[in-house]
Image (cartoon, rainbow, N blue to C red):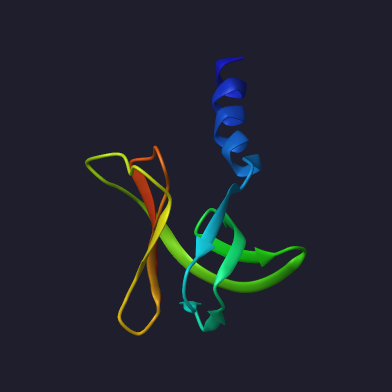
Length: 102
């Protein structure tokens, strides 16, 4: 019985829902190779894959990883490099951030 519980506990995370938040982009930004215009979008993170949606359309995809920070972010924001490439996304009330590979 204990072995079944352990096996089930290992499988459950595979069925976890993607982390989804609404993000506002104030200037053109790049997610991976795709440029995204200013506006409001849905960001969905499933494992190490981030997808940006505008309505039902997928406008960008990129890979990354979760990292922990020392303090919670006071608001949801994007950290954008000088070339417009999104480096990380910080989420209001969360210590973890999603850092993009590209």
